[in-house]
Length: 299
Length: 313
Image 1 (tube, rainbow over the protein chains, first blue to last red):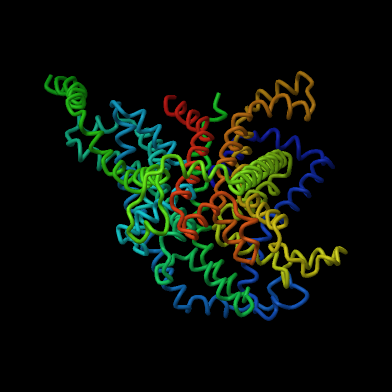
Image 2: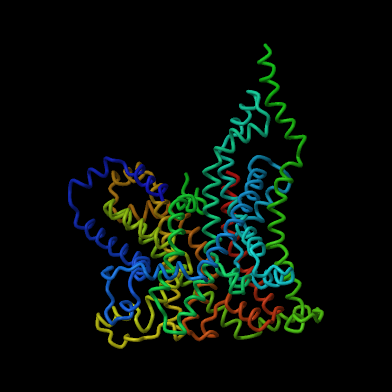
């Protein structure tokens, strides 16, 4: 987020802003109104989710919807937070996400180091493979992954699903970290070695701290992906006791549908799943945009 | 004297050591390669083998699979249902990718033209939509379009479309895909708009100033100067969008839960799921999966080439 916003601020020269301010242009006012209307349309689903989460279900079911939180209540959120299924899925999601992040960061970091610090035979083919792999859709693989995990006895296991997530996330993470590693000049490390540090110590003391922001951004990215993943989890975690939060939300909605959907609680559950994601997302957004399309307009 | 010798030996020493240790990068790659082989390599291999075998319920219970050559492919790709699913998926993908990029481009251009506080408001709302997890987003859209108490039907009745009271959007195929498109577009436009907008801000002010001095109007500047400069970004996001909109299993599956006609609303991913998990026809499912993988690889070619160019730079 910050990246995009600062870009704007630095690229628009102050002179132009002043010039525009001096005369009110009706075109610009109209466009601004249009922009605000579109912003409202875009944010409405998120607003509606959060509003419904703090509104009693009886009000949501009434003929005329109310668009402001006149009937604010925390009881929906409370009943979700005390739901044993939710807590179980939360635990499962935390374990899967935690294990995935640790393994992805370690493995991808080593690989990023290899491809950005060394020129070796096979380097190009490794990068090419990784870039293609990153595009493979879960839909094209989940039947085979199900068969594999089922024959290994790893269905419904944290290890099984995490192994698949690690493989799914390594390519993009390697690609992202490669940029960070390449950004730290090797001369810094060599200078430290000249001053008497051993190579491992020079790496740990000089290079590693400079890579911390990259590792954090990649870690958050891995968190978002593993936390939100639905398709593979649906296939690999069929047991109710092994559900992660996205799968649990789906069955919570289905269970609710049997006795007339309690949208207030469903929206409370959606909100609880979405809020950590939204918070973390705002931290890494700039990195993610530039990771996918950076350089397209350079020069 | 002593210091100068160490200094001159230092970098050389490192260079030699690096040349002498060509094994290090390979060792560093081992964990990543192993993880990729286990999580993706073996499944792809299994898929290739199984697509050439009779592999169904019997095999699930221990009968040895029989090699049948290309029978699965022949059976699957002479099935008109499969081609109907492929056609629906491709149409859904292309229409949504085009609309997403079109709307995203419009928003990006609009963000340039408005007051800065309006632009920041737009950016924040787009980020919120982008950040919303897929499952939560689809669930919210089910609630918005709920036929009993959904706010969309209520609004439509308010503006005079009385027939829309209690209209069941997810109950029939074409309005089902309409809602699915709303979700997909709502979720993907922010990435497109932000990327193109970031591209727009890179267009240098000198170039625009020069065009203005030469007498170009705002419209000419937009179409003759800015658009050609951001065309690479637009091409990349369009390509990514096409690839991503082919993989909408989760969105479709979650919307189908509302009681949609399953076979009419299945897209490729859902069809594979039904074939494999539902009918236990693993040979057929493997054949269709391979088709999806190959299609994705072909589409990804230009994107990968573009990223490789960046690596070389």
